[in-house]
Amino acid sequence: MVKVFQVNKSSTYPFNADWMSKLSDKKKRQPITELIIPGSHDSGAYKLFTELGIAIDRPELNTFWINHFSFITFPIINRYSQTQNQNVFEQLKSGIRYLDLRISLNPLDDEFYITHNFYGPPLLIILFQIRRFIKNYPSESIVIDIQHVYNVDSENKFNRLMDLFRTIFLDQMFLHSKKTGESCIPSIHDMVNNRRPIMMIYRGDYHSNELPDFFWPKTAIYSPWPDTRSPSLLQKFIDKILATSIDHSRLFVIQTVLTPNNRFVMKNFWSSLRRLSEPIGEIITKLFAKFHSSDDDDDYDDEDEDDVQHEKMNKINIVMYDYIDRQTNNGQFLIDQIIAANFNETTINHHDEFNLTKKEQ
Image (cartoon, rainbow, N blue to C red):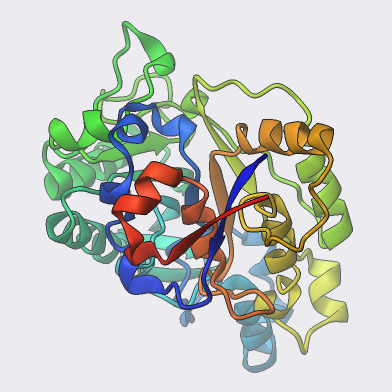
């Protein structure tokens, strides 16, 4: 007999703002690699400013023809560059606990911006949104993955970026111990009780081996990129990595994202990233099918299948995707499915505002 849990269709964002506080004490004391965490892809690319021109992260797009016909080309590129439609504060309130940030130092005004083909919001705005959330919800913990950094290629530039994080977050970043190494991944209990609710991972090239202790190194995370436009190839990619052994001494990101290349954009200039990524809902739902199946679902009657599914579930850590407001075909938010997978029977009985219905089969 296997216990499974179903998220009711009525489960909505307001209950997700402090979902970590509702976890069992056992869950809170486990390393965050043992949790299932919803993450947003290119978290800061919810607004891009085409009037600033092509950003420094995509020099190959900064051509005469693309710029000369910008009234045609820029809207097309923008539709495939925007990855979210909620700002970072709203994403965190929705339940997101992993943020993927791409940062560049704009050579035109020498300021730091979010970057994804175009320049997005100033980095300072993003950091203020994160700080606001932490202040409002002190029981929550956040992983910030600085995945790419552009035009930070000198000690002066690196120190400026470092000082910006230090100034905004002060002592709220959980420190990485160089003695114990990256194997000492913190728990929610560690982060909240020490009032250091942010785990900041820096994957920029410059000074990556000489990081201050509030920046965790790139070795603290494993985030394989599928680099495909095909939903079926993405599914095979995810199945393949879940079939391998996972190192629980570092964070593990499942990138449930479809990536357009230049050829795809040219052939589908009328479309958008949001439309391209529509199949993601089905892929994520399949990941969590065991936890959200119904009594009359015969897909998991086989005990061997149960064991395989549970083994895969134990490997899932961070699930990252575009447009975190996505819903399944029956109107359920994907983020609710991801969060609900963390809740066992005891937690559900004590925190029924998550609208989780316990079922047995």
